Length: 615
Image (tube, rainbow, N blue to C red; front, side, top):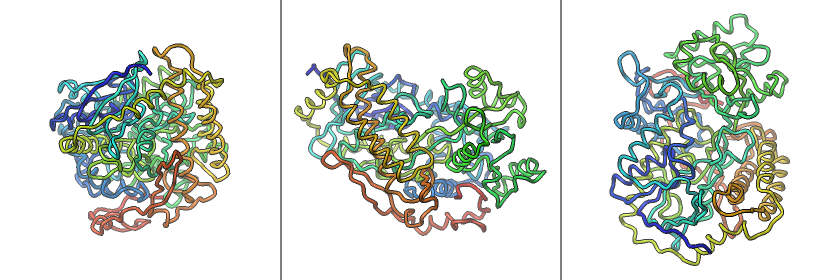
């Protein structure tokens, strides 16, 4: 086995998106010797894709907004499958994290009074998203990155960590490789924070980039951590449909938040048919009614185009299946007829340039062709809500890789505030643990075994192409574990995944370890297939439809399933699934949630939203 480069730290943060950067900043501030390790370049994180804004009840646009309302919207949007404590902490602490970001140099759009401007997003009762045009995630990463660099925190870029090391039951570090040279590298650490994001590259149509291969989830379950809610995958309703080279690329929800409307190929605003209790799609004054409702925020009314993401994605899917979709299998998103050109270019500069440069579409004059794209996974590693500790001592997780906060469906904008709130808490807890934990011991036999495993693809002499295997995996997940699921297709997916796993073991890698993408993908396949199996098995177990998980053979939401998580553990190399009860919401918070079909006054004293977060 090759010589291994070695480093020692108190806290190692794996991932340099919003959660990883915020965790590292906090751990460093508390005196822990901290390192950030990222698979790509610093600043190239999926946080940048969160264009619309940071959800926080600042009350700058609507003074009626507060953490209780935000908590309620998050829980209702998540179909009450959320960890209530995480939803509470998130709603309470998000405003302080946004103001902290501003203190560190983030430049937000402003109200006429100079306060941070907030915009509408699906499932939120009030305009709540603090934003910078449609480049909020980019501004957030810029600010956090500059803060981390200014504090001289060590950063290891283009370095993939593949396995966690353990000392008995506790984490003791991690091993991986430099992507450019292929040289192996290991970190000894008292605490590790996973902030590696999701697993979007298992699907064909996704907004996710090449980094999203389920690394953190796979490392955690291999080390003994629990996973929950893996069946809960979010298909963002608006990804680019045409041209094929950019299919799935995200179109921010901010387009609809700023007045954009969804239309089928006939020009009909089809979302009306999916809320018939409020509108009739065939009435002559539908458009006029919608405009009036859109402006009537004090009565908490919402345009149907801003229903939660799971509901909008299913509606678009239904329109396309019914033959009312566009030429390329999507629907139209129109803001050109709703807002002046100058307004669109000022509020949505990234979207304007994205469509102009990639699709030759001027969104100030033309409609966008869009459709659902796999965007996010609500499931992931089970964590303690206050500390983000996993079930493995010394291991923490924050951001998309961690589960519980969003339940069955994430509301737009909650991701960025999630990163800030729980990234900070994870860094704080990891630093505290490192101070009371003894020096970690590296198991040299374990290290050697993992190192040999990383080099194994060169020694197998197999007959399979890793790119072909990955392509077939994406087809399998897209066709059989997509927006709409059913038992026979899920079972077929499991059969295919086993075949793909056997083929991946024979993946052929040639050349040297010096920047070798084929080798990298051959290693990624283990994680992609393993996490795909976890998603598929969880989807098979949950026999109901809830949030991001829709079963055609179990189309209704079952109250019994709303009280339990699907939990996954790895035992003797195999996934073991169980259902476990969700912690009950305390009475004082339960009162905020209202009835299943709200019609009266909420506990906050303001009227209940008509559509936000409802099934």
